[in-house]
Length: 316
Image (cartoon, rainbow, N blue to C red; front, side, top):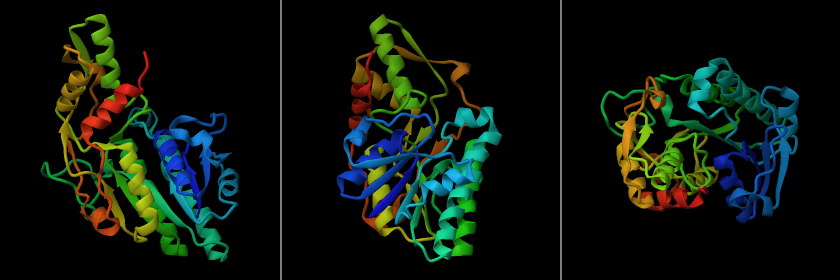
């Protein structure tokens, strides 16, 4: 199968293109102009073609889909919540408007009878917002985003749905819950904790600065997430939304303590307002029943193994 992966040079994209290539698919990955071809997760050594993509440029978008792929996994996004808060307009330009351009180009191909691709749109569980109770979120709950990042991703979902209604484009939406793994940037919480704890152990520091440790999150390993995306390409129902989740929640305090044990650090957490997010969701855990029923997927990598692999992948 000819598969186009947007945002393929990112954290999840590197793992995904490697997985798809190993399965024998003909993979094209996109990267931002000027961004190097990654070698993490083996993607440099696989038969992956690379091209630049600027989601703000309709010409660039048209060139990216010119090969008429049979499947598209749309990962490209402004994925940092902090960056989205600093510039909400850019978040909407990249995430919502960029998705509108991509889906429009794919829809035009279908309307012209040139191709009939399936589009897996990777969204976020943050579109659910604050729940009425600390319970696993289900796909039939009405979205209520409370951040520029989440609202722009919901905008991306609506853009894709509009094109699907108008052209028949086969759109499958994955709402992914938090995930981590080896190679993730320490802009994100798990590798950030690991980096600070390793430094504390090395320096003998008694404390590590953190944000609020009370929120509960449903963490998955990136390799399990990639397996879910591949399963949805094969068996996802067009028009459906699927939670990519484990159904198990961990408080950030628990994550911190688990990493401290793995690293052998005795430092305690010290909440610092500099690291505290406003409007942080107190509980974000997903019900994966729909995904499991449709594809048979289930997470396979234990959480402590994921944390160990994150620590092992970091270098001083």
